[in-house]
Amino acid sequence: MSDTRIIDWTQDWAKTISDLSLHAFEELASTNSHSKELSPLGRTQLVLTNSQPQGRGRGKNTWVSPPAGSALLSSWVFDLNFSPQPILAPLVGLSVFNALEDIRGFSGTWLKPPN
Image (cartoon, rainbow, N blue to C red; front, side, top):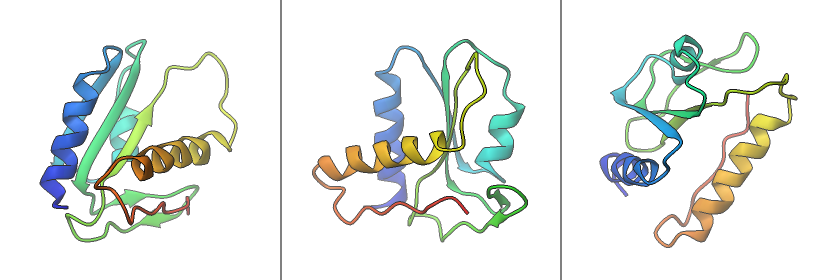
């Protein structure tokens, strides 16, 4: 599946969610850094890119993007009225992974654990 198809499919899906604000880029330095610069909207925001040359990991770790087309890179922004627990990000990732595994055409999907 090409990178364009993955990001196009994801954009089409995101447009069906009325309370989701989508920010999609062909290349973005870091979805994590970009998401931290977004203003709260009172709804969930999704930042997508095909490539991120300056990705950020957990803590002080960096994250190097694989070649464009081999991954869909994303950060989710939630307006919460409480401090999220460290387990939240892995649970969201696992939920997305399970959903993609259930969709025909996404076999061979894998989840990269947080670094």
